[in-house]
Length: 448
Ligand SMILES: *Cc1c(COP(=O)(O)O)cnc(C)c1O
Image 1 (cartoon, rainbow, N blue to C red):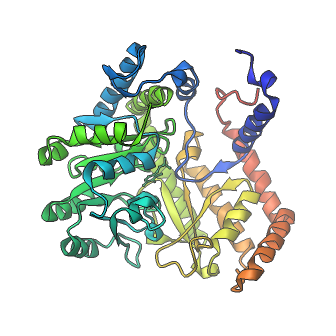
Image 2 (cartoon, rainbow, N blue to C red; image 1 turned 30 degrees about the horizontal axis):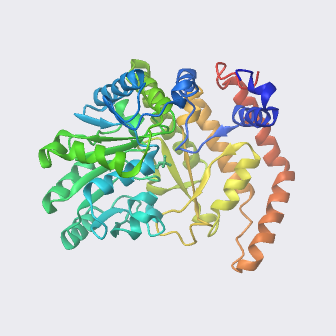
């Protein structure tokens, strides 16, 4: 049973190796991703995976939870210390279930909620119509202005008009600092709960390079696998402001997670969150978080000086949104595929008032967490920005056919042509050379 996977399951092992090679030889520029430490992987890959522990510490339904209780309590204490909050629940399986638990704790089906509109950079779980959060609750979306910044006047007017029970602040594709303080005032003025979803920026918050929502929000949710650099997972924190509004809020959150939504917690994931939180409280994580933002600003500068337009003309955090309208509607798909052919992984993304559709959007989103984890700095950002700009220009003459039937064949032909494009091949080779200088995870060992 304890035989190595390379012998017991060469098929899966082969795929793990291939994925290892892919990330080793490429630049992962998707801002929601990160590479974790060996310690985090070790905490994930052990027999804590095997335990059943429904309930909370000292109140479990199964025996044998002495050490699970200790590890979960340790994780909670670390979360409380890292974010300076009085209560934390570390059991949510991921960011989306954490957000669902907040609804279950605060709202009844049919209640009114407000959130950052998906097509303006918000998350599905903040009330988008395709998510149950937009179907079970009356969702009032708010938007960004044409300059890409949140429209605080609109948020205030909508809140006064609709009197929501809960207002979300936080997003998935927003390159500027979130106005927690202003949203806190708006929520207070209408008696709403303010929930800050800092899934993307939680590592920057701990690292001190993004304002903390804790003084302004009643509840804070986060993923643990983005800038926080831990295992996939989620957490819900209740602030002192939240407890002052509702002294039962901590208990309501805990009951919503279990038994409201989930069964047994993933104890190996909990252990790995503890490891990530401890790493994030070390002084060198402050440097890491600051470097993520410095790199992001340097990459933004390089892109703009090479003729690429960014939404809001820059960034305050780890990500940026490229506005591809000068190159044609729906150009995000082309750029995503062409960059992938050069070993640079990004995601296509809508931009504010996108002239195309979410499936063929007119932007791409990129960020610097993983390349900063690899040790790259401003000098490398300058090169990467130039490569991206060169590729955008290389494919500028492709255009999404307006006839939907024609699109599939056109995109197939596009992919064939870029796979043979000599200029893109040349950039790919330069990317691979750069990656060699910043070896991924000597400690990862997946390629051995
Ligand atoms: C990533 C993200 C989530 C969801 O996290 P999953 O782990 O993918 O479920 C929720 N909210 C925001 C703002 C996010 O960026």
